[in-house]
Image 1 (cartoon, rainbow, N blue to C red):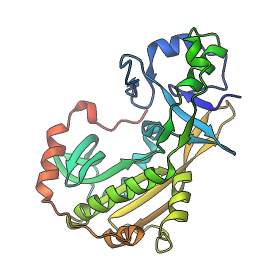
Image 2 (cartoon, rainbow, N blue to C red; image 1 turned 180 degrees about the horizontal axis):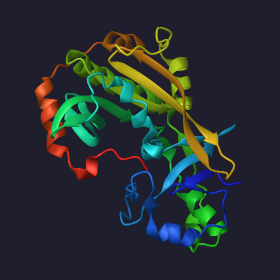
Image 3 (cartoon, rainbow, N blue to C red; image 1 turned 135 degrees about the horizontal axis):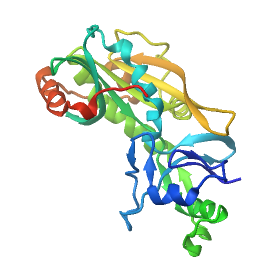
Image 4 (tube, one colour; image 1 turned 45 degrees about the horizontal axis):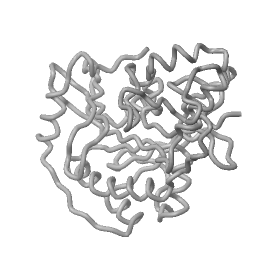
Length: 282
């Protein structure tokens, strides 16, 4: 059994698929475009790896944040945090909006007549790998009859999971960003896999986080990968937590100061609104 579970959004358990065409097309079904995870040495080649097995736990570990965009469910699960959204408003998913401390992956915005009425920030975080998944990818493709560089498929290079760096980095980033959302009375949602939440609970001070309250500015939504009858996997929410900037500071034992005017964020969102950002189901 291959440690590579999904490639270009397709289950590797289905070896009968036309993998040659899939690899040539390099299409990401979650972004609805060519996969943007490319090899540094060959930027014209997309890597396409979505999830893998690792270690003793034989459940998928998501290694590409765009895998979390399946069915746009993560945005649907944030709708209740649009507290001033009204019927008749459009919903837009706007990528990469800058705020103090970095940028936010997506904003789910409630828009009326091209004017933002409300928004929720959505951050996607999956586990970073150490080493490379490329040899496992090439070995699988070789096994299903796709021509690959034999030396790459036979490579002994392996990969690991960078639990500590991933967890610490995201908490520090959240600590900088959540104060911005708190200051303007808006919500920021971190979307992660259940594995990562379990690690955060074990390695950091998380005992004060219990349940989710709509009034809190910082929300954590955790998802698992449920197996389906066709050997594929489906994203499924497992838990929700919430806190505020003080709560994130307790997690890290740090303090930070970040404030920004609401108008600056709204201006950026409105400048990016188009037919392409319109939230569509299906």
